[in-house]
Length: 102
Image (cartoon, rainbow, N blue to C red; front, side, top):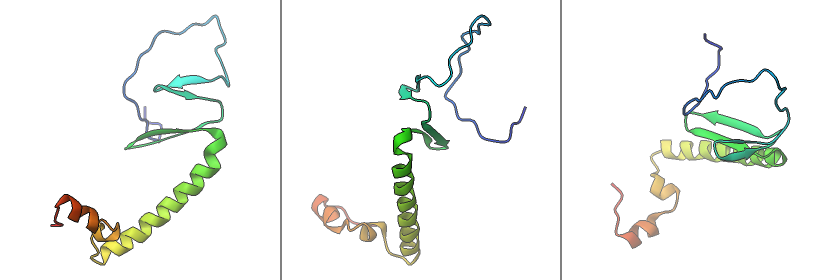
């Protein structure tokens, strides 16, 4: 059955269900080795998943927007022929390591 949105998973394990209890709602749980609390934001894409603490969502969103804007500027510069070494000011690092940009 197709449900219209991507699902990301490493595997699955059905341990069985019980019909005699109600289960838990709004309780912390471990997910992928990370503690996830009620209200936390979970995002996933082709590169992986991230859990954002609910108290950090605003800060993470602001930093994400800044990162996207920086990436747009970088793309414009790289499209003009500027190398990533030049853009990121890595010339001295390359020189120190004896590397040459090819």
